[in-house]
Length: 203
Image (cartoon, rainbow, N blue to C red; front, side):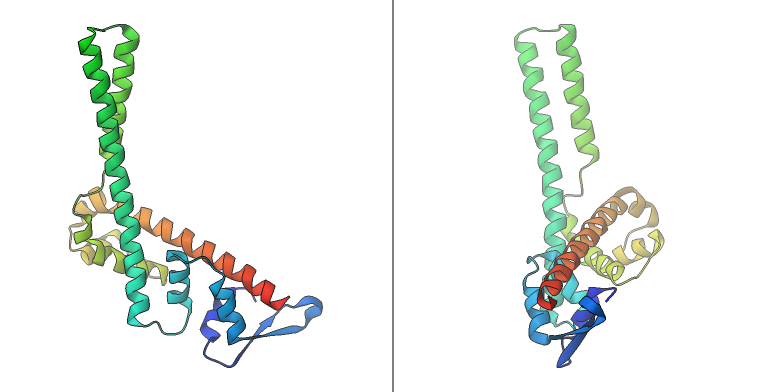
């Protein structure tokens, strides 16, 4: 089978057939086999996406679980960036104060302070909006749509987020693109783990 994800859509039939067994034969996998293989995939947003996108019709609980996972991923990254900025400011501030206390204006000290100040600026530029959670329902909807194959333009994404296209490009495009990259990688990793587990069941 070229795409093992297709097996998830067959959980409703009594038996799913997996082509490609040794010698060109066919291995029959029951629903229990497929569900068992899926259970061997590590829990998390990757497996949740795999089930949502390729399994039988999802329940509301399945959808909410994915939305929660997407929101958690984005807000944790927002918080990490905020912490990086706070840490950079603290490191620079302490070094600046100590240099003043010691009246140290040596060239290497000044150069070190300039490096630390530059790191503060870099960390500040990487900050995400503090009120990111207010846009997460719309961002998560765009993300799930992308995972389903929707390819919206920046203008269409801006409309979905209820912001102007210029605001989207200035603030939100980085967030959406980062999130989509993480989700695609997580789903692909889950699909690889599922394929491995299916192979073991078929052996």
